[in-house]
Image (cartoon, rainbow, N blue to C red; front, side, top):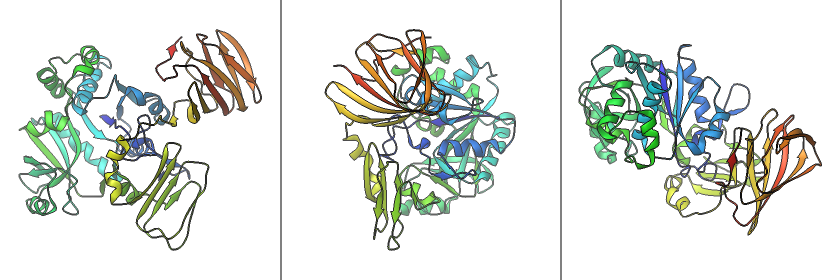
Length: 435
């Protein structure tokens, strides 16, 4: 079974914990079996692995999230990167072409495409076996999962099936309705559209030839920024006639906002938080070292990170996005494959960062054209490579790296570094990678 997970997002609806680099699927808020926390992405992959041992998982993501993604997935999970952000149809077309042209998988093989931001029980993924069987052995072009509605929601699109059977042909699709209209859809047997579908790789490639004028992975990748910014629903799903839906009757939530995310949190608070007994239906997540004390809060979400602090009524938190779009602040916290970095001071010609490297991890070997750097080792032991010269370092050491000098560092133990960047043109694009 080949499963493609769509892991995109601009990180605006769960600010300040999410940002352009760390979208909502990377936020660790779900209690895991080892008394730690896991992210949406980790949770979905774990649940999928329980279906069968014979499963291949590929994650489709944007280039800006490749580093953090490698930190969250095992080596047996493939990654397909978009060179820039587009919509779901170009991303899925690129992934289908990658499977055929790079991984050499037959175009006749079925794939199941699934977003990573749904909160579901394990039995949700058992429906994938039925979907794969229909996509592989029947004449149908597309197979969807339709979620049996629990209330007349205005937040979701609806699939109207021809019958109320477990598997049915699709009559039509409906956009997000009013609650009154949604009630009528439910009476007809209408289902929430969860954005999960199965088809053969060849079907996606056929649509790529029609819409993008090519089905070559290398051509799609090369022209990616010029491709139409169009969703898979609008480009393909809603126009397809030969389509079936598999009915799912179980728990399902689209955890795209703080309001819905708080509904599935197993704990009232995470981080340095104290909540008094007068608080009701309130959740607090604190990623900073500063303590938060909450008293007398009702239906409130509080979220704090180095990027900012949100204090919002839970219902109103659903309308957060336009406020975040008005912010033009530098991202102050990001997870990388090697660990994390936190911006602790910004000045006109300098940037000061706290870098944490996990034991065994290392930075890419690189240089900068427009800035000097100073590394102060605060904690741990490691090894630097400065212009191909290897040197051991430990707490208390200071390493000066002039502009143009190639450098990297590897952590022997967990390493804490204060990095000072000095220059008149400090930006993330100023990086040249070396072997």
